[in-house]
Length: 325
Image (cartoon, rainbow, N blue to C red; front, top):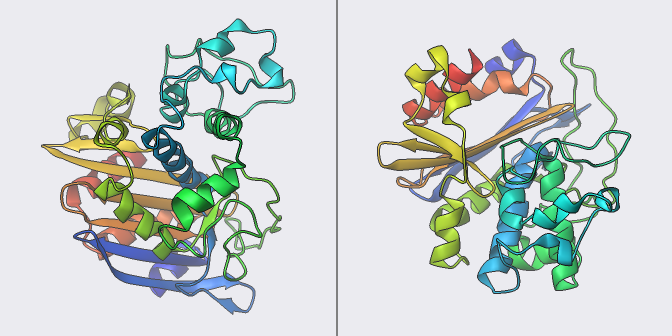
């Protein structure tokens, strides 16, 4: 592992390995910061691995009867930027969690607007997740960080996890590094972002993966919706030469990208920020999965070598290799 990190110019990686629905190994290699060794207890910026956490909080609220996947969010939350756009009344949590709001990934300086009519097309959007979290806050009357702590982090004993800098972290976060190996500024997160910047250790996130795979604390109906393709990605993900390594289908579920391999479904997500690349996946049938957290712009370069070294699912490895080619 040390040689892989050095070769790919990645400062550190923290890995938790899941087999048969249990964590069987967790370790870290490299530098978490100047003169600081990474350990399995080091929390990392999750980047977009934040999104499945947010989706899980919303789905648990739905299972508890406090929210509805298909309720119009406008009755409880409407972004001020959309005040004069009647399409806001079409938005539902299901659309937000499956990237079908019609929003861009993030708003520009002019504010939030629709790129497409809600529900008509698929477009990856952090704004959609933020919208769903705001709706959950208004609908329940409880701050989203508090909802996450009560419904997710505390029950799963994710003690090193949180949305804001003061929440959960058991020590300093891994310092981000650019592609040349230069450390980047670490900015305090003082208000939650439902799509980005949450933090956790690899072991904490692996506990979350295991919980998701087991469908705990969800009703059977809600669990089925989470692992059903809500937005088909097969045409764009499997076009041309990529078709050779693609599963029969792939799409966005609620919070996750889903890969359908011959009766097996793998749930996966990645994350990328300045100085961070993250990866998580679990096979719903076998219970085998992995979490990989890095603190480098080059982090994506070590994902395939780590998956191969840990003897992860060859079908998943082939799919990812095809997507990267």
